[in-house]
Length: 226
Image (cartoon, rainbow, N blue to C red; front, side):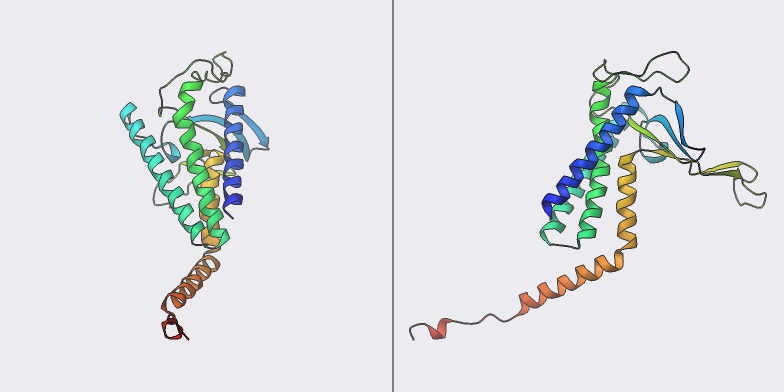
């Protein structure tokens, strides 16, 4: 099980990074390409902070955020190793593995992209996509996360009776994200969907362990010397 989990993590991390590097070296910042009609597009943006564009201002804030991500990913890896040792349900183990892979994928951007890339020219500026190892735009842990997946499936206007944003336009799904983000989401959804099976298995396993621990040990001392 451990080998399969680490192979999965390595494979999807490589896919995530290859896709991000392709986007960074072939698209201009803000460039958008329609893939399947209007509802699936590749839209190259760079995220300086957390999910949905939230961020902590300044280099210090970026360092704090990057260090927090590393600590969180380390904790997830520790937990993953623990549940593998305890032989928890395979779906649960693979779900936590996906969550770790997603966290690690975005950490890699923050750690190294500022060192190996120059600033991406903005779409319409006349510049060319940046090449890998073509200068640098930030220091270690100061890189921006590359996002590109955009699914604006539904667009409309909030009705007048809506409690907030009445009359304003809305887009679903508005956030632009990457494969690493999707790994985290898939891992969480898998846990929610299969929670009954996962935790039933884990509870049954704990009961078996408890029974083994409480089983009286046979005293062989009385048979010695017979």
